[in-house]
Image 1 (cartoon, rainbow, N blue to C red):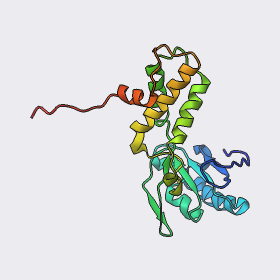
Image 2 (image 1 turned 120 degrees about the vertical axis):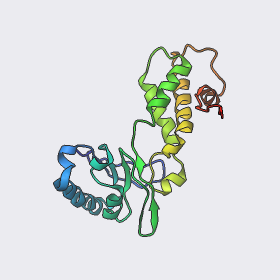
Image 3 (image 1 turned 90 degrees about the vertical axis):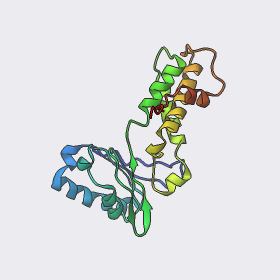
Image 4 (image 1 turned 60 degrees about the horizontal axis):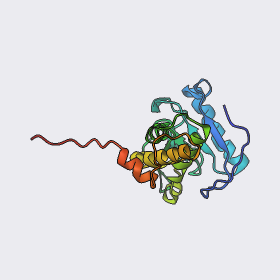
Length: 203
């Protein structure tokens, strides 16, 4: 249910934090489960005096282990929160928080797109890492300041283009790409290959 007492120094400027993954509905769903989570989160904060990273990953929103508002309230605004389904922005103590959405929609389109535009003949573990690194690079300081650990999903086309470019670049680096010659600007090439659903008006 939970990770070990795993601490990390975040490269994004967050202090060390304790990661709490609330992913198993059997333990955390329903009134009893919610009460358990409500008691657990403040206890973690007291024990570690750090910012807990709370990942309420169950879908849909109604099944989330706790809401964004609950997480911020129980931790007095110190939680770094992300969920499987989207939650609306909320306020605590006059500060605005934008809950993140931990969804594979960030990675998979760009990953597949990068494989296609490079003509990769094989998927390598390093390509998955390249996709993850590209996603992380799209999170800016302004997002961290709002407690976000993912870029806004509204920017998914830009995000996917960068992920595809990074994946394709890794395919070329590993000698697995068949679309030759290699483009000089992978991001621009990825953007040029993207389908844009603009339709002509006939009225």
